[in-house]
Length: 506
Image (tube, rainbow, N blue to C red; front, side, top):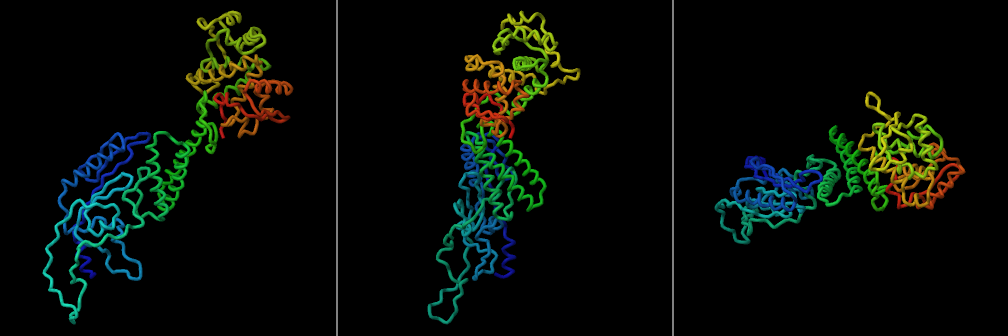
């Protein structure tokens, strides 16, 4: 093909093309957004992908009915989109033409198999035949053929030229489907993936990730482990993308994906009660999030340092009263709240607390023990009253306090502990162990056990008494596989009480 012929083709009118596509309307919603590349068309929001596909097809058909017939003088709209018909040959018989179009200009319609986009374009019949799934909607009127010389009989000496031969069929036979073709305007995280992005493996990974994220948004039930894996893949792919393009925004997006993956994995561990590799049923914990678990441990640590009287009974009573008054320093109490703790002499212990000034009552301790739910006794713990600037020893608010108090009350009033008439030390140990497990209920950080020094700080008992308390918890179906050595206590909280545990942060 001469340069003049190339220039002549370049001056032809470019083919028309428009695309109708569906995209997710937002996270956590089944709604979709229908958009059309025609400037006069506005986006539509539809309730589901099924409704969106029907609307998209109807929208495209309306355009096809209103569109003028294909123009015989237009060159293919797919010429600049890596169309396999327009790619030059690289073999030994490479042709000199920059493209190899043929046949009349038609209006072709193509779409992807997933039903996410539909495209109409003007192109030649050869390009349409080389495009998988292309359907012809209209065909241009072929120009009048110029007069041709009469056929020369066979055997004459006049040479035969291929450009003078009349083809039996102006439309060439369809070519075999290309091995690789991607639809235009592929996206991930609202970013268009360039069609010329290299390496090709990176572009393929980004396209696949975009498809996976859009598929995840259509799920009926969340799969946090799968979502965390997708976020990690996104972080790696965006980091590579940033290295290739030197785009700082992509690197920032990669860091966000790393944070999202970590947060999603933590949420998955909290819901399943184990690591992401564990196959376990979800644990419906009384305290549901890590922030609540940290606040529960902060109260236990504060009481360990600020109990005015020695012994496990005083420690347990101070802990329960602290949880009742933690936010404002004041609260309400009835006699059953004290008598249900398994204390040897609750009246004497309460009088010692009031005598030391740690607890303030409007009347006597006897009045407190006689009070009932319909007429509770107001109590005050002066050390927990907020300062003038509103701060106190704890950082949680008034809505968190009853959750923590209910958690502790659920443990100390456990039916099997009450039936076994467990002592205050046993109930205090149950509280301590519940706040010191891993996600699966094994004692200590990483399930490696709790040191005796740490237990002694939280449960003020002698080494000889600790074994008895552990035996009581084992008999009450709180602990299993418990082993007490000179250095630490190991074991597993039973499935019955696993909802009461507060896992340590990994």
